[in-house]
Image 1: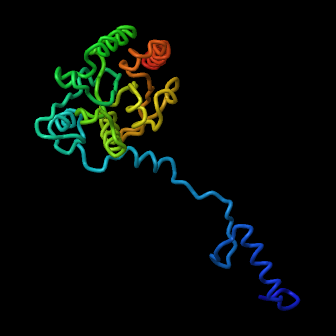
Image 2: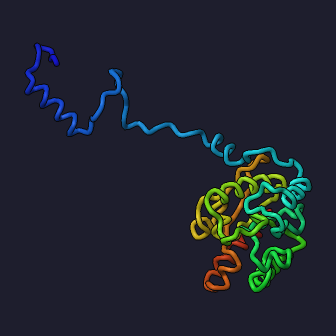
Image 3: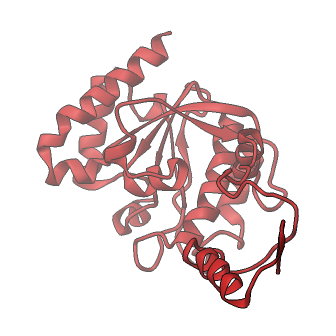
Length: 242
């Protein structure tokens, strides 16, 4: 090694190298200066949204055809011969889409989403905002129940891509996301973090406004959360009235 006024001694070179090592330099990259503190460039937001909105394969581009595909396709998560499916119901042109995660065993037996005590509470929630099941569009991330009753990350990602396509085809004025699984899949956060504010879901048809709230089955066990659910419903009513 050399310095401006001549070669440096081996001891001096060793001292310099030790200083670099102490400073965290453990390899040589190139001779050109580089700003190591500058953060790596992140993908443009539009690119991230487009990637999130686009399913991996070609899906039916019309709502009626997509609903028929959901009822028959063997490519859905948890699809198996004879496995019961609970398909969307209600009015897809109502302007209000409600999305839950997946049917329960009772839902599968009755071929209807949100049955039993949770369903009765759900009906009362709808009545409180002047709606019923015929004046909303009710769907789920998965129309099939998983064997465990939960969504693994890979299945959740696949179901979320299908749900974004579904939401884009229905093009509602607003979407109400019910429960943690649904909020995590589409918003990347649990209900308790997502609720109380509006979000935008990226779809092939553009951004769709969404609000997250607690699932009726959760409210049965946590009745104190009903006041928060009512606040979410009030947000929803205000948006629909605009």
